[in-house]
Structure formats: C-alpha cells, structure tokens
Image (cartoon, rainbow, N blue to C red; front, side, top):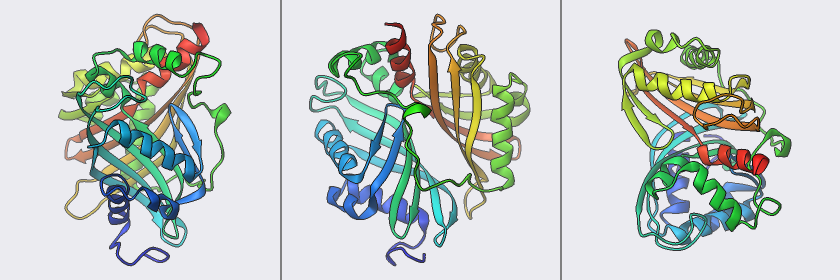
Length: 322
C-alpha cells in the first residue's frame, strides 16, 4: 500500500489494526499519527473537528467503559492508496458501564451494540469520517426509550440552548473526501433496493431479500425473514413520508472467501409528518444519517446490517417541539 506503513498487508488490515491499537491497546496518542489535525468526524449526535477533540472524546468513552472491545466484523472498501481509500468498517462493541459519563450514572450493565464507521484514508492517516453508533441498542439495554434518553441528555448537557447540537447538513463541515464509492454491480443493486423501499415500493423486500434473511436493525434488533424487514423500513418511512432520501456513498465488493457485499451511506431529510417509528407527527424537521451493509446470496440479501441513531432523531424532535 503506497504511502502506508509496510506492516499493514492491506487496507482492511490497516483499519482493523489501528482500531485495536487505539482502543484496546490504549494507543490513544497514536491518533496524532493516524488522524489528521483537521479531521472532520460526523456522527448523528454531533460534528467533531480535529484529532485533539477526537482524542478527548475517546478518553471520555474509555473512562466510562474501561473494558470496551471493538470486534471488527467487516471492512467494505473502495479507492486506491494513491488516490485515497474509503473504508466502511462494521464493528460489534462490548462494554461495561462502570463510570458516570454521557450515558448517565454508572449502571454496571454490560452492553453489546454495533457501529459502522466510514473513514477516508491516504498517506497512512484518516482525514474524513462518518460514524454511527446504534445508540438505540445502548439505551434499550439501560432500560430507557430513545425519546427518554434524548430528553435526559438535553437536560444533562445544560438545556436546549447549551446542549450539543445533533448533526444536520446546516452544521456540516466539508472535508477532503468527495468520492461516491465505486460502480460495482452489487453496490448499485443494493442502492437501488433501498431507493425503491424509500419510494414506497415495499415489494423490493420480497423480491430482493432471501426469505431466510438475517437482519441486524437499529435498537439492537435481531430478526429473520421478510416481515420484520418490512416493518422496520416501513415504520421509518411512514414517520417521514415527505422527507428526501439520498444515497451519498455506495460500495460493492467481491473478495475471496466472502459473499458479494455492499455498503451504502444514506440520509432522510425532511418533516416528521407521519405516524411511524417516532410516534405522533410533530412537524419537526429532522435529518437521519444511516449506513447499511448487505451480504448477497443466490436468493438475494442474506444478511442486512442497518444502523441509524434513534436518539439523535428524538433529540432533534425534542429541541424543536419542547
């Protein structure tokens, strides 16, 4: 890999290796090396600028969850070392809530949840990132609803005028990566399926998903088959029926010993003007940042991993409606 440390055999090895080095081996200071000083990290809950702020956030998380593990499930990537590469890194995280922090008073509870991080890297450093945690899964394991957590977080952050603002395009900061992924057939196929679903063509599910599809959906939901896929996507779209659906990035890959797979980063932006996942319509303008991974088999999608942050949507709703 031109421009990268020779100890990394390929790009997935680099992404998996630095993640373990930073979080589990406590190499937090290596973020000075692996993240550029002007890095932009967008998550549904905030926008963070610069590796110094990322280091501070990393230390705060490890103080709250000192035994946290980040188990890399897959890295779906595009690009080249010369032009830069985009990794969509799916992680299963385990952690015990042992200290007070963002998630409130320490509960001693063990959490398991997924994260997908889209990172652009060139010359051995990451300079642009989109990161989504399944916060709904975390708060469910705390015994709270996403709405209740959002209201509590606003209060703990100092109220509506002082709290951290959730991500919307209005507060986005442009980064160096402007790519859209690749034109691999599998990525295009999955992007088309999601676009059909968001266009109310729910027949895309029985025609495009295996009947035995394994689903990992927001809120830590594990399910199987067409019906739960229909329920999740229907309830999201029903809540935001007039919102604009946009595919921002798509990757398709065929790799040895792996099924054909795709990574799609997308958004829904518009009014909460329907009954669905977020309850009674409020008219609030919300932005949903989402990332999905899919693995394909002979009968369509065999596994789907969809992540968006329900708590960040609720925070936007609460901030606008009280």
